[in-house]
Amino acid sequence: MSLCAESIGHNGISTWLYVQSCEEVDHSRILQRYLLAQGQEVKFSSIDDVPTHWSTPLDIMQSALKQEKNITKCIHDIMQKAQSEYDYATSNLMSWFINEQSEEENTCQKIIQQYENASNTPCAIMQIDRDLGSRKYQPLQFKFPET
Image 1 (cartoon, helix red, strand yellow):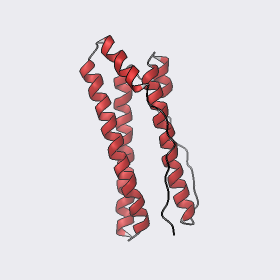
Image 2 (cartoon, helix red, strand yellow; image 1 turned 135 degrees about the horizontal axis):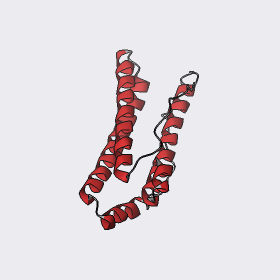
Image 3 (cartoon, helix red, strand yellow; image 1 turned 180 degrees about the vertical axis):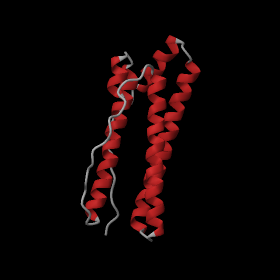
């Protein structure tokens, strides 16, 4: 998504999406470390081809929101399974992720709203892009509870 945004001349949203992808890697690492701490093996499987081109920043953000909602559903499924098995440690971790997903979905929705409000006004779209480009990556400082 970030590269597509850059390729269509929207470097600000490209930066925003790149920072978002860095945060998603941090989230993945939290899950990997949790699995290892629980004595589980971390396995990766192949994924299907994913879209790589969108026409507008609005299209990109709508796709990003759809992806975030899919991840939220997966986290809810994990939470439900953890609760049914009285796995309180996993439930606790999933609570953190549920809150994080709520923030991410809300942020995507706000950006979508900005683009919808801008309609096709080039000046407004440029301002949104400029604002999104100011986002900076800050590595997540996540501490697991002491065991």
